[in-house]
Image (cartoon, rainbow, N blue to C red):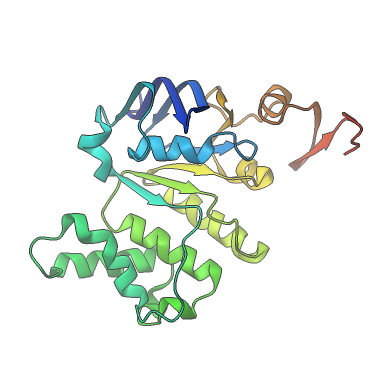
Length: 255
C-alpha cells in the first residue's frame, strides 16, 4: 500500500524583499515521514517552512497539504517556531499556553471539556503534566520547548513542523527532545529543520539538504554530494557508528 502524500511542493520559487531565497523546490512528504532538513544559515530553511504554513507567498509554484490548498488545510499543521520569546514576568501558566493552541477550534467564549482533555493529553505526551500549573517564565529553555510542542499538538495536526527547536537548549535536553520527536513520529508526519547533522542522521527517517535549491532523494543517506550542495565545500564522510564529517582543506581552511 502506497503512503499518502501529505505535503507536495512543485516548482516553488520564493523571494524576500526582491532577493531570491528558494528556487525550483520540488518536494513530496508522505504520511509517517520524519524528514530532517539541513543547510547553511540563509539557505531558505525557515522560509520553506513558512511557505508551507502559508505565511510567505511564493513568486510561483504550488504547495498542497493533504491534497488541498494551504488556505484550506493549514489547520492540519502544527508549528514550533525557531525562537519563542516569553516575558518571564507575564503571569501565564503552562496549561494556558497549551490551551492557546485550541483557539482555532474553540466554540464560543470558553474552552470546552474536550479542549481541557486535549491539553492534559498533550502535556502527558511531552512529559510536562506535573508542571501544568507552573508559570511559563519559571521553566528552563528545554521545558519551554516541550510546552511549545504540546501547544502545536493540541489541535490534532497530522503534520508537525519544527524550526531549530534545540538551538537554545543544553546538550542533555537535546537528546531527550529528539527521542520525544522520534516517539511522536510513530503517529504523525514530522519535518524538522536543524543545524545538528549528527542528530538529524541519528533520529530522522529521511534527509534533505537545502541551500536555495533542494537536494532530496527520500532516504536517510547523507552523501558527500548533499553536503557539498548545501555547504559549498568538499567533505569526506567517515562512519564509526554515528557518522563524522571531516572537511578537506579549502579556501585556506583546514577542518
